[in-house]
Length: 94
Image 1: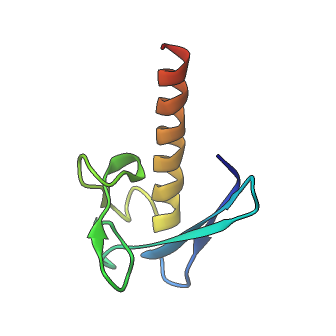
Image 2 (image 1 turned 135 degrees about the vertical axis):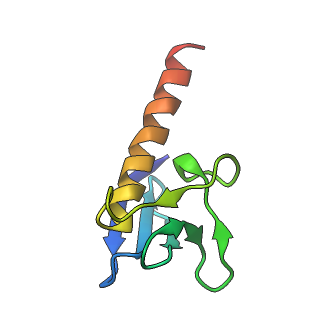
């Protein structure tokens, strides 16, 4: 599990990084982007792959709507909270 997570918004609203620091001190960064006027969210700007809801690699494709979430970081924070909440619910009902 990570001990810290940061959402780093780029100077343009359609690019963002998520940076994790794990309890063992290791660091991991995920880069995200989307078309400037909204659309499918992708990870790894050099070799783009679509991201799904909950920041998963499979499932329903994640769409960014700048009218609903002004920056991509806002959408990613929302999806992260949703994923963490779902995981806590699953753990509590095992």
